[in-house]
Length: 171
Ligand code: SF4
Image (cartoon, rainbow, N blue to C red; front, side, top):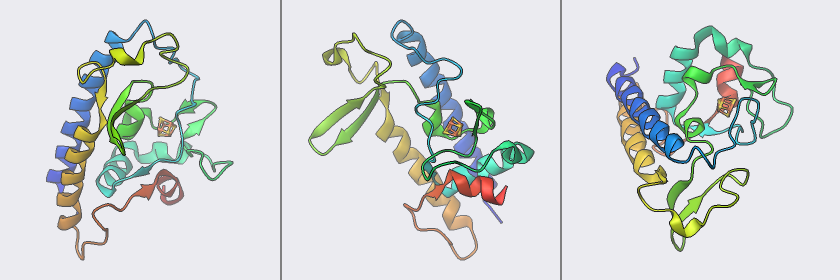
């Protein structure tokens, strides 16, 4: 029996992330080239089990609208340049196009899409105008841990990721 509490916590975190991203999309509107049909960020991401099960539940029959990916790294839910599980897509997909702040090997780093921020001075990125990836990932890690511990036999390791393609295969 999966933990409905952990799934609820995941959905609340995802809502919070959506609100945070919406404010950053607004802030950087003049730099962003993101538009329907641009799918360069899409790939077969690995996701935590709690996300896997939440997406499975929410997307339901839409999972069947995916298609067999034509490469090892392609996401099966990208069909004709559109995401067929858009409202249920994982958290990582919701941050696409934004400048992402994370702790790299040599300290804080920012990663930003090469199609956006073409004339932007990267020195101007701060903790306020970037998406704090590690902060959300840490919270997601804890929710996922709670989720795994609720499953009989704890069948996943705490850092284990499941490829999106499995959602398509198991539909
Ligand atoms: S789930 Fe949707 S948004 Fe995310 S990589 Fe796949 S097609 Fe792209």
